Length: 283
Length: 323
Image (cartoon, rainbow over all chains, first blue to last red; front, side, top):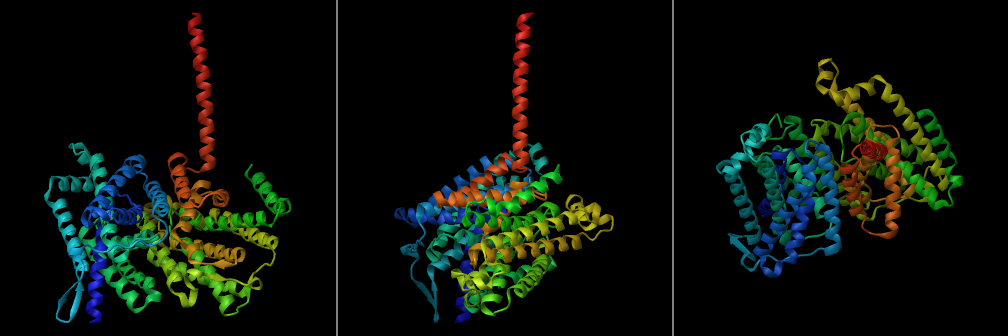
């Protein structure tokens, strides 16, 4: 019973982590920008969703995703693009931006945690034998799976995806054959930020939204992409499952040291493959 | 020039407590020294080694906790505790260095951020040891120096000694090869240098200096909580380095002065320090990426050139009209 519930909750948490980390990984893979606003945008998405809940849960998630996409576009256009080629300056600029976003969230929504109830349709639990699985967590797992498949199809099967892959492989050549790389960058930044925002919104019913959520989630997302390999979508999937399991069981078995245990997978993976499980050697 | 500047700065630092109007101001001056030392530890990695760490406050905080726990919980003498804490700092740096130095560049930055947050998480969650979010208070008799002025001179002495050592280190074969590894890693490794070992030693030195700053931190605040090792604290360290001038000897101390003063002034008027911190970050990166002093110098020079070229143009205009 304990193990089944534990694994179930691990996968639900892994689903949230994947949505967050996939956006980060997408941006990093294409642009080589470590977008540290990602945690803050996740929190902002959660807050926006709590405020937009009167329009219905799914509309609120959509509003959060669109608002965060717009913010991501603005950050890319006004900040990241101006610092093209200066990796460190870009990271530090997004870091500065993340402080501003998080502090403005505190100003707007206050310091108390804001909880959200899951939509009526997804409340309650389904029973299989003697086990009860909350439907909302099942929904999270399903949603993450759908996003994973959607992203994979987009990258592998659409023109946009082909252009993104071309720009990742050889930016100058892609530009030379007429692919609007700058426009692609902005699109990907918007998409990544939308994923973060949507992640924060769908996480709100089980995690609620509170100040400090950004700083709690950002390192987990970084661990996921470091483990899985930066820029690799399947890597993010595996990474989020590993971190989800270790973090959830860590909190259940050793609450004092739940953070220290996160150190272990990182040590093991980096010792064997510094570029991450599915990372490319050149990246 | 530099020598004269150093002597003047040292002379001012020595008489400062006598000039300052009260203990409050001496306290702030001491904070500048402690964070100057912390920024110096960030600078050893970022400036000399080209490795920007976003988790350095973890070293400062872990050392501060180590000292506080040794003294307050186990009753170890303050001087013995300080030496044990330095060993502890070196140990953590040796451990984290093994992990972080598997990578470079942005991955290094991301891993150090994650490592810093792991240390933060231990302080926050391991409440039986660290008292969690409430932190640990130190009794006055557990300190290395008892009066604010004595603490000022203690911190000044430590900072001066560390900077002097760093000055020697920068010119030493190890210091020079560290810069070589920063600028030309492939060439250095072809020449037979063990680039990993050079980076690793720099990482441990930097960790020990940060631990030293952590020991001084609990001396002046007599309190340590997870807040001291947040991402914000690590970022402030990086901001001090880049605002003062990355890779220079005195730049980080200057940057620490700017950040500490701004933080203290701002806290009197507003609760929005993180927003201000973010704005300062953006300002430095977008407007003065090489630091405030070179940036100001450049702006002044540009203003002078613009002014003189404007005068030159108006002169040529009038001369044309005369023809």
